[in-house]
Image (tube, rainbow, N blue to C red; front, top):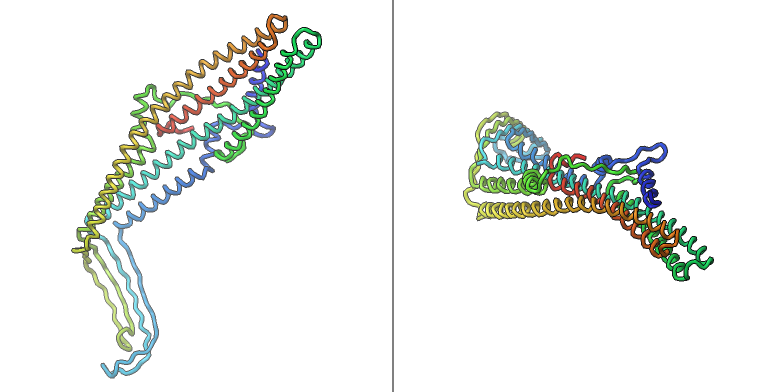
Length: 426
C-alpha cells in the first residue's frame, strides 16, 4: 500500500472514531438533528400550523354560535310629564343570550372549508418539500466535511512525501548524482504541497462552518455514509411517474389550484341568500322609563340576500377566476419543472456512479504507478521529476475518488428530495 493510501485509510478511521466519551454522528442522525433546529423548516411548520388554524375557523361556520351581550348604565331622564314621569334617576340595564345556527349559505361555508383544507394540504406539501431539501442540504454538508477531511489527510501525506524527496534530492545533489535543476524542482513541489495543505485546511474550516449552519452542531466525529439504492426507482420513466404522484413541489401546486377552485365557489356564493335559525332570550330594566321591566324569548329565522352591491360581488368573482387561472398555470409550470429536475438528477446520479467506478480504477492505477516510479528512481532508472509527477498524479487520483464518493451520496439525496414520499426517510 502506498503512503498516500495508508494516510487516507488512517484519516478515514480517525474521522469515523469519536472523541473520548462521545459517539460518532451518522448522516441520518445529522438529518434528524437539522430537522429539529433548522429555521427554514420551522417556518414551514409554522405556516402549516397557521393553515390548520384557518381550516378550524372555516369549519366553525357550520356550527352554532352562542352570544351573550349585556349593558348597564346610570343617568337621569326627564319625560316631561308623559306617563306621569318627570325627571328621575335611572339605571338602565339589559342582557340577551342568542343561539344562532346557520341553515343555508349558498355553498359559501362549504367552499370556505374546502379552500382552507386545500390550503392546509399545500402547506403540508411545502413542509415535505422543505424537509426533503433540508435532507439533501445536510447530505451535501456532511459529505463536504468528510471530503475536506480526506483531502487534508492527502495534503499532509503529500507534504510528508515531498519533504522526504527533497531531503533525498539534497543528499544526492551534494553527492553529485543529480543536477541542480532536479533539486530546485523538488523544492518547488515541496512549496506547492505546503500551499495545497494550507488550502485544504481553509477548505475544511469553511466546510465545518457550513455544516454548523445547516445542522446546528459541530461535525466533530462523522461516520462515512452508507448510501444504498433502496427506495429509488429502477428506471427514469418510473422516477418521473413517481415524482408526478409525490413530488412536494407538484403536490403543493395542485393543492393551491384546488384551493383556488374553492375560492371561485366561495365568491359566487355571495350572490345567493343565507338563512340562519336564531333563538334569543333577553331581559331589560329601566330602559324607557323608571321601573320599566321586560323579559322575552324569541325563536325565528334570519335571512340575508344582497340584491345589489355596485359590482363588488362580480369583482370578487372575477378576481377569484383570475387567481384560479394563475394557479393552473403554476401547476403546468411545476409539472415541467419537476420533470426536468428529475431527469437532471437521474442523469447526475448515473454520472456520479460511473465516475466513481472510473475514479476507483484511476486511483488504483496511480497508486501502482507511484510505487513503480519510486522504485525506479531509487535505482536511478528515472529522474526525481518523474517521482514528483507521480506523487502529484496519485494525489489527484485519490482526491478524485474522494469527490466521486461524495457526489454519489449527494446525488442520491437530491433525487430522493424530488421524488418525495417514503424515500425521504433517512
